[in-house]
Image 1 (tube, helix red, strand yellow):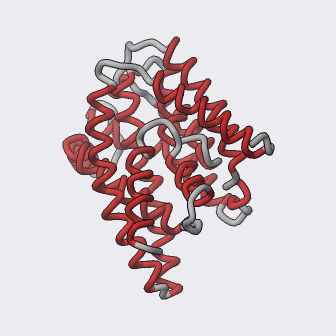
Image 2 (cartoon, rainbow, N blue to C red; image 1 turned 90 degrees about the horizontal axis):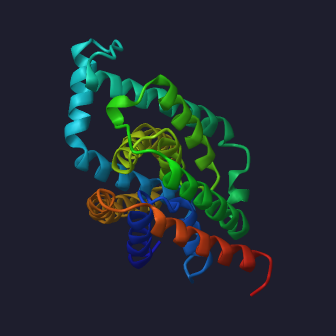
Amino acid sequence: MSVMQTIWLAIVQGLTEFLPVSSSGHLILFAKFTSFEDQGLAVDIALHVGSLLAVMIYFHQDIFKMLKGVLQKCFLPDFNVQGNKLAYLIVLASIPALILGFWLRNFGMESLRSAGVIGWTILLYGIVLYIADRYGKNIKTTDDIGIKEAVLIGLAQCLALVPGTSRSGITITMARFLGINRSEAAKFSMLLSIPTILAAGALETYRLWKASEVGEVLDTLDAIGCSFVASIIVIFAMMKWLKKFSFLPFVIYRVVLGLILIFYSYGFF
């Protein structure tokens, strides 16, 4: 894979991973509508790992509090300790997608990487995001999230296994339905990405090591670095945006893009 393709993919990943518009869908579409070959799942995961590093840098204080809370209680859950509580809620919310993703890894998920599937998921879940953001209350923060909320957000994350759904978009949507304010919903969604991406990255690293694919390893390292730079910039911009504005621009973008992809997949142009 060329350096130019890596840079373009990193820009696409950085712009779309934490915005509720589906990074995986855009990465697939990038290959379909350019002269570049499909970069494959390994590079997709590497790009997500770069975004993961950006999340860990931006939320380093929260991550430190979670680690401190877990260690303070010797790895035992204690919801009276705020950092401990948030850490175990994120683990709990991650379990459904980790189990389902592991189970589905050999069930032909590549067949879902089509413009038609992505068009429908981008469109429909964009409309659902609008409803949640328009009518959801702004009365809760991450401190108010309990087991019920964590489980519901975790179950919603399973839907993101279908390209175009958007992992951040669907988890933010559920959080908004539950009354969590916009910036805190985005924060929990980003923290929730850590276990899922770590698991996917670990599996892909093992596969590459076992296959001794040196070329693929170099491609993934380049992808991680470029994606990190793009992602950290977008995280800062998005968190600042959500303190004053809604998700409406992203909804409009999803609806327009979804309709274009649906018309294209059915041969209207």
